Amino acid sequence: MVKTLGMLFGIVFLAVGILGFVPGISAPGPDGMPMLLGIFMVTRLWFQVFGIAYAIVAVLGFMTPNGMLLGVISNNPADTYLHVGLAAAMLLIGFATPKQTA
Image (cartoon, rainbow, N blue to C red; front, side, top):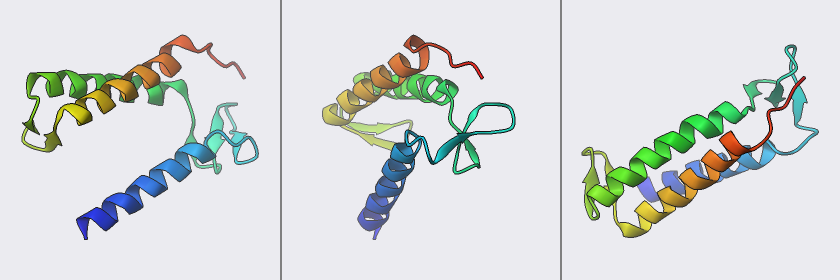
C-alpha cells in the first residue's frame, strides 16, 4: 500500500512540475507573477527554498551514510547522491537564472 501511494504521489508531483512549464497552463496572475492553473504561484523562490532543504538533507546523508536521518528519512548513498543532484539543480535554477519582471 505504501509503495502504491508513493508512486501515486511521485506521478502527481511530476505532472504538476511539468505543467508549471507549459505556457498555456501557467498564466500571469493579478500581480504579474506566473500562476499554475490560476491557483499556485510559480517562482524562483520555490527552487531556492527546496534547493537549500535538499542540500541540508544531502549533508545529513553524508554524515549518516546508511540509516535514518533525524529519525524520519531512510537513507543510503544512492539517496544522498540523488539529494545532491536535486539540490544542485534547484539551487542553479533558483539563484543563477535571471529574475523575471512583470
